[in-house]
Image (tube, rainbow, N blue to C red; front, side):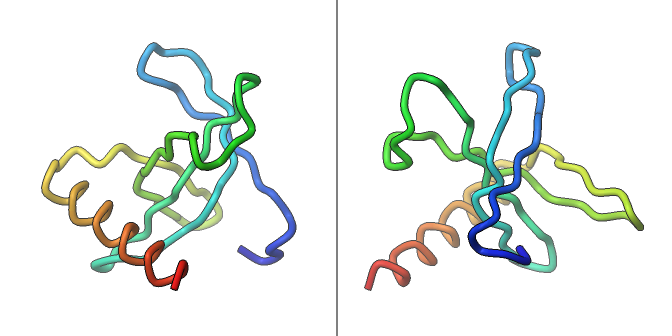
Length: 92
């Protein structure tokens, strides 16, 4: 993202069909694809440690960009493992 201090927000549809406002926490590239890590904004807790991160494929087409569910379970698991490794490296 262009400015580390600038928070960016998006709205996505949750599993129950309701709109969920999320902060774009990070964008990562892995295996020739781009993935977005989204943190749901809830009034219950502002603690990032307890928040569930949503991982979606991030697709740009021209001036448009959108998020897509990762349908392949193996792909999803590989992406999550890669993100965990990045997080561990950052903690060191």
